[in-house]
Image (cartoon, rainbow, N blue to C red; front, side, top):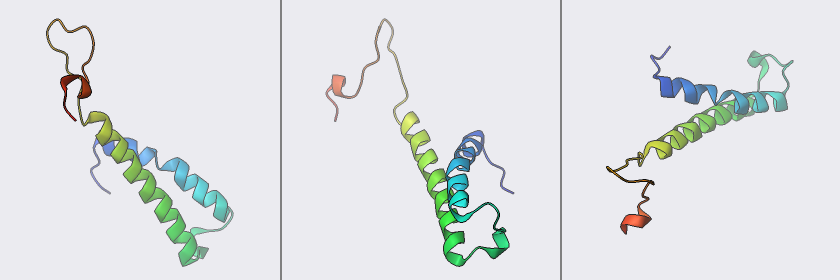
Length: 84
């Protein structure tokens, strides 16, 4: 078991839906030990993709933190400052 951070735990939870969808396609009545290699890879792909997408979204959300200058009444985007 990993010592996951709060962000990692949040991203792991976001994998539940893709995992459930992949497992539903295979069939919940089928034991994991009876999965074919293709079925196991489908589930792994769903989980890994879900985790990477969640981590990417979290990174993008914090990439440019909101900062207000004294007296500023609205947030300034990079475009407003002339940066690309």
